[in-house]
Amino acid sequence: MSKTYKIALIPGDGTGPEVLDEGVKVIKAAACKNGFKLEFTAYDLGAKRYLKTGEILPESVVDEFKKFDAMYLGAIGHPDVKPGILEKGILLALRFKLDQYINLRPVKLYPNVETPLKDKTCADIDMVIVRENTEGLYVGAGGFLRKGTPQEVATQESINTRFGVERCTKYAYELTKKRAKNNKLTLCGKTNVLTYASDLWQRTFNELAKNYPTIKTNYVNVDAVCMWLIKNPEWFDVIVTDNLFGDIITDLAAMLQGGVGVAGGGNINPDPGGVSMFEPMGGSAPKYTGLNVINPIAAINAGMMMLDYLGQEKAAKDVENALIKALESGKIKSMSAGKMGLSTTQVGDLIAGLI
Ligand code: IPM
Ligand code: MN
Image (cartoon, rainbow, N blue to C red; front, side, top):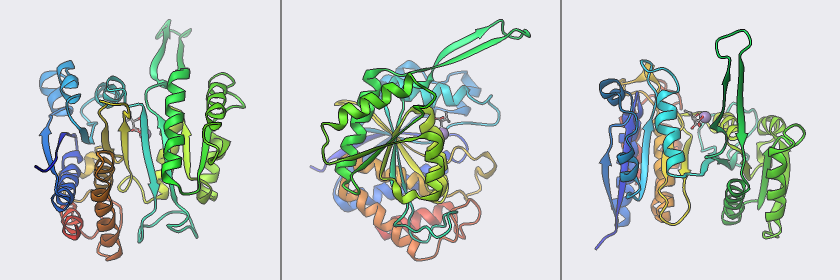
């Protein structure tokens, strides 16, 4: 009997369904080649359901997700819905409710992909950013006082727990060890100003370092990380950071690898019985919806991460090799929507065909 993995699909809004279709096509090809099965169940979360029924994320659906081996998401967000409602109500809610405490963002420049950095090559841009995904400024702590008056006060607090920081940092150490690239882990914070939150991170980071004698550690302030990512991306192997800093530096880093059309990510709950969710970074791209011109590579990359996470490392490698071959063929002219020289489906067909 071949192994079957149950995957929950959330195509979502805008171009989400288009890119997810190609991701599914490619990972199915890899599954077929490697003798295992993927069984998909689609969920209609997103703008359409919200606008029709007012439902955002029913609790029963969250419970259903817990029974899957993994989740695969297209995009969330729609111009007809006030910004934040769906992003917070679906994407962030899933991360929190399923305790997906790691946001994993590999940043790798593939051949024939243009980077805006002059004189940098594939050898220079190959790192992983580990972003804490359930705490920090994202928890929604704070509030208004005298809202709407000239004396209005708004507070927004960053919540950092020893437990949360430690499990995230530990994950980053383990990943650095497993990756075995430069064995270097960088903590990104702001110790010169955030003397409480960043202090907790730094103490935790330094204490855990004792358990990983083979790993070189260093600390860089977040503003300086932004500078060095542009100037010397080759310095970085694995970076660990909090939720908001991670949100910002992963977008910056996505550009180094060719943009959001390429960048895939995972919301990981590494605990036994935890369920993780994989997604392209591109967003719902309303202006390209339905045109078959959006780049599906980010979704394919996210699918590759999902296979790896499911323990199908060989299948994940097959996807990566096919992606590299497709890029080396020169048939994909650009990573930008509408400029690829191929349609969304043709890019998916090309990569799936090479598997
Ligand atoms: C991301 C996104 C989300 C975030 C938004 C859509 C809420 O930007 O996954 O990085 O801020 O985490
Ligand atoms: Mn973001």
